[in-house]
Length: 236
Image 1 (cartoon, rainbow, N blue to C red):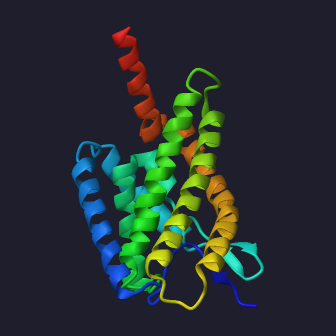
Image 2: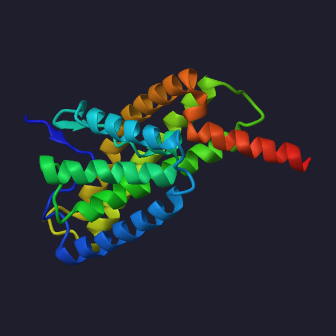
């Protein structure tokens, strides 16, 4: 049995033209907003870090790991990028990777590029980051250190992966063009992407912890948490 990569890289013909156009508009609007908001995050440290994150995710996405017989997955990278460089810059990094993969390597259909960007660059990134921020606040007065950050990154990346699969299911429900039933698609996507999310979580946790140990000042989530703590102290 040949291996099928299941990681939201939607090909042409999975959704109809109207749905492709709809999510192309959603992707363009989302990226425009991210570009506007990212201006405040990009400084002399963040710019080279964003380039490194994009290059790392592009390289790691080329490596597939087996999930089930006939099913493999690869890093999506949305949560990883968000934790390291922030959700707005992170979404732009993932979008750039997806555009290059689509146009130069035929990984994902051109007509489905908007849907793929919506799922992997927007939904995965912002859901993963939201979970990371929520867990960070919950654990702020408990256990600290890189082990806590690793656990947060793992859970956030798992949630981000499943949310991206959910985006795929929603798009298919709106305008699926294949003959497979929605129930079958939903069950397959959620089932496999829970497993893919575990791999995503492990890669994200290991990478984030490694960066945090070497240069904690480069981790966006840690800087945000530090700034929030300083504001609380000043207010008190």
